[in-house]
Amino acid sequence: YKSTLKTPLKIKHDRTLRPEEIEEMQQAFKMFDRNKGYINQTDLGECMRCMGYMPTEMELIELSQQLGGNKIDFDDFVKLVGPKMLEETADMIGIKELKDAFREFDSNGDGQISIFELREAIKKLIGEQLNAIEINEIIKDVDLNGDGQVDFEEFVRMMSR
Image 1 (cartoon, rainbow, N blue to C red):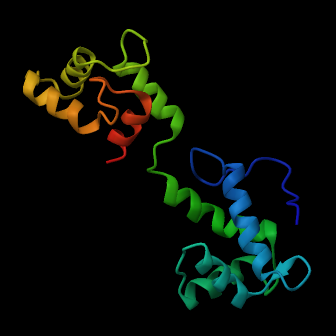
Image 2 (image 1 turned 180 degrees about the vertical axis):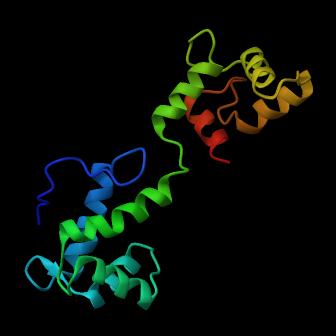
């Protein structure tokens, strides 16, 4: 099924749905589409559950009433599930934000965060200087390859804890 949405879907959030999110919804929709491009209210609940959402029967009735019928096409499905997906990912940090943050820490731009750079960045962030032992503990904790510095992959792991 191909969506007829002409413009990227913007749903009361500061970002649009990414192509992979629309693809995930498309795959779930196809699993329950026995009606040539439509799913019904019962299928809507099952479809949402297979995507990890747990709507109550009352929510499902309200959702299908919003659409004014028992037939739900893919665009309607996106309008219903899209906001839930955006809500769920609203607090997640994207790769762009992580790269920007990494560049802030990596003051000399060599692609590594040294002990000195980490100390300076933490001082800016929390307003106090950590001692060498505390900085070394942080480095030792996140430095997976043991080179004494933090590369981007290690930084991402550190930020996702």
